[in-house]
Length: 371
Image 1: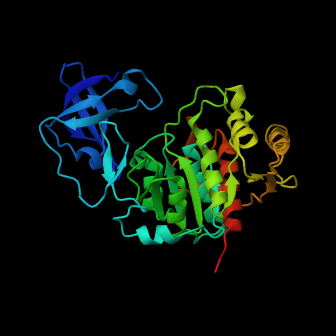
Image 2 (image 1 turned 60 degrees about the vertical axis):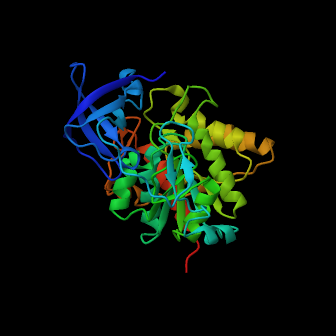
Image 3 (image 1 turned 45 degrees about the vertical axis):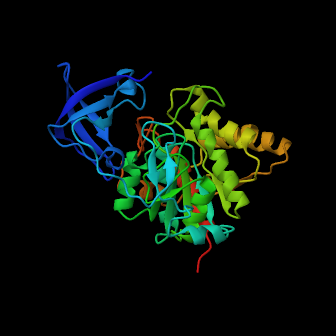
């Protein structure tokens, strides 16, 4: 069941491309709250307008519950959508929206996608947490400053790609060449029906040198090995392999998480790469001869071997433990124009979480064909 509340927009709050944050005074007189409107879905509510809100997550104080969501403008009908697109995202929900996808027969890139057969050795680096995105970009840029980077936003978490302030800021800073929303997600620079067609679009439309695939903000986890939306990373790694790309898997690592299952190597990396993955991938780690290498990194390597490499090998999958030079990566992380946080922890509080993502980005950039 949904929890509905009505209110009147009293002011605009700090917003970003594709997202309008509003201050809304509730109709029942109980106070004000912050709400998000997606102009692509509702248009932009103006001060004084009445709006219908979904406050489910907000009232239950869930991880996605920082804001209410504007479902409808009660006094204003938004403008009619363009008639060109006929691909439906968020299908059969009250907020389903029409888009023109890269692989839409009516779209300008249809012939390109129809003829594309592979991604020509393009590295595809995959992570399970959205907070890895800026660190992956930092690792790529520290290795190849001029690389064209596409980001594929999957539908494992936030469906609106615009919800990611991180992606919006990286696009504004021209550190990402394009955002492609795949599956049921929507609102990127380009749309794609599947992760596979998103990767083909990244290569042949965006002309990306490296592509990053990560779910949006707001992943869903249950504390169980398989009940985690980030397991979807498997699909992206499989897609990269079957399309002739080079799959690189980001190890989820933490030196500060209070939860034992995420300390050192996260159990989600063990499940995803050790038990679910059916294709070999590169697993970037810190070299033993690096001056930063210590007992923590030795423990992570041991966990990778025991919970990923060995179980995968028993199934006939030979992953590659890839040592990646970390020189300059901390500086690259600190220079990024977005704040690094994961599960509320900053770069200073949990450097390993971002370091391993940056290693994966550098690994991918080093494998990209040039010229």
